[in-house]
Each structure stands twice: as structure tokens, then as C-alpha cells.
Length: 203
Image (cartoon, rainbow, N blue to C red):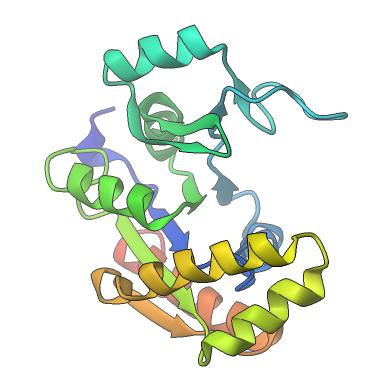
């Protein structure tokens, strides 16, 4: 099947740390499975307890990851906390060809890479739909990060600086959603997905 006949779409979600992207994505996957699936990304970090290769991540050695980068096998890749992460083209293309919709949770750099690829890649052309979640008030984001209780004060400040830079790029996305409650965010995400799905020929 050629890329032009592929029926799946890609819903890409971005937003600053602590905004609730993971919760929205998990709820979307639960609501629309098996039609909507998470793209399994590749990483050089070691598996954690209970994680399975090919299910949670594609676990690669640093050398294998570098070889795939050199061969142009990634749509996007980045270094996070000293480990490499990326989305393999094969992962995306196989799912789209099977008529499966893919959900991606990536940062603004990853989103930009996907947008650029969609301009020339027949598998992505017309099938990429992007959403950015942002806080109504940056201080609300700071409160959410503190409430999570997983980051030091120094790390929270670093994440806030990153968030400020990320929010300036909201206009690059198809949809910019001001985050509210979990229920409101999920409702908005569901609506965006269903509209995109209709445009992708699956509605």
C-alpha cells in the first residue's frame, strides 16, 4: 500500500512539563483504542522494571541509535537528560498503512521536525494534526509542578524557563488549547481528534 492510500492520521500533542499532556494522552488512548495507538519511541536509556522492548519503547544501544540517525530513519530525535529519544519512520509508517491513528507526545523541537517532514513525506502529508496545551497563567503551571512533588525547586525553575520559551511557539500548531480542568482538556482533545479523524477519511 502506498503512503497516499494510508488511512491513519497522526495526532501530535505538545506543551510545557506539568500541563497535563500525559493524562490527556492516556485518556484519549483509553477512549479510542484500538483505533488510536501510542507511537512507540526509541531510546538509549535502560528499561525500567516491567518495561518491554517494542511495547513501552524500542530500546537501542547508543551505537545502534546513532546508526539509525545517520541513515535518516527517524522523523525526530533529541537528547533528554543525557539519553537519546526518537520516533522511527518505520514505526509511524507501518501503523498508518494499517489504518491506525497514532498519538505522539513530543516537545516543540520534535513537533517542528514532524511539520517539516509532513511537507515532503507522503506518509505524513495531510495526516499530521498538532495540538499545543498551555496554561492560562504561568503561575498555574508552577503550582502544578510543585503539586506533583517529583521535582526539586531548581528543576521546577528550569522547567518554567523552558515552558516560557515553548509557549512563544504556540502559533505554530493547528490548535492551541488553554488548559483547564482534566475533564475540560480531555473534552477539547477528543473534539480535535474526532474532527481530524473525519478529515483523514475515517469519520
